[in-house]
Image (cartoon, rainbow, N blue to C red):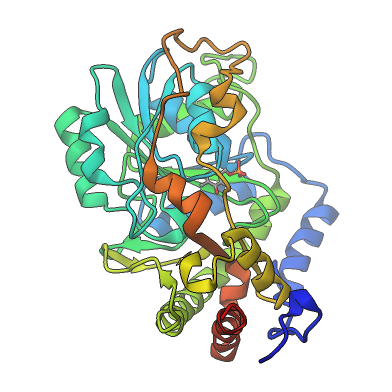
Length: 403
Ligand SMILES: *Cc1c(COP(=O)(O)O)cnc(C)c1O
């Protein structure tokens, strides 16, 4: 039997997976801006406007507003949607903090609804039970780049007159029934932070078909100025959330690679899932929930320690990483167990006193965190088919060693 790398044996995977991917075109785009001296465009014209137009068209949406990051993107969409203090917003508990913290930043209350065990996306069958007269919006997260069940979510939203803000921070270029993720709800939010599938170091964008939402978000990210207004004329409580020309020019270049990269990850994902499914105790999340392009910001599989001699998920993920697979155990606990929620550290934000997260229970998310979920990161999914074979062989090696 081969010795595990974590115990001093040879690694299964020796390759380093590069991220970000760039070449002379990206470097020249940034250098040209530096030389021009036009590092920013205070009116959000120039490359910023050009990128907004291209990204909106790419998503099949009418409008797009860039901003400093994906968290602010969600915040802009929430405020523009008309939420008021004390309103409730439904969010999943298995996601990055911003999906829920931006709700608090609007003086609103995140209400956690559990995820589906096959996809780790918001479980539509559990949404209706969480709706109250105060519910105003739902933020489905296309987690790992897999589409949420948008038909079901949009139907619930229509029935209860809720705004749907898609958190597509993992899902640039992903699709649900051939419609681009982010373009299906009332607004779709993306992040361009450096780990994301489309990146400029930092940045964010909201796409929408709703002109009223667009005008408000455009105002909010530009210190409350309005279309046709003067420079020293501030109508709304916004802020300077503008991006630089450097980011926009880089994104215009990076966007050219996105489709090919998404195709590669998607194909690798299908292949890796088929390889891993043959190993006892390993179950990739299931496809077939409407996704027509999975971006695999993460490749997630479920781990069953009972098939691995009781080896904990954390130990398994560490052994896998030691084998050279860019893998990680993911979130160790659902969001509502964070001190922010447990201790109600809401600072100056006016969150109603009755709010209490100590009794929230989402068993599927809890099991995903503590027992099941193992992540392989997106840049590794850009590898070759042989790389996917080597990832599966690394898992099989740990399985053999556990016997
Ligand atoms: C990254 C991320 C965000 C926020 O993006 P930032 O650009 O880091 O602010 C929001 N939601 C999810 C699911 C994310 O992964």
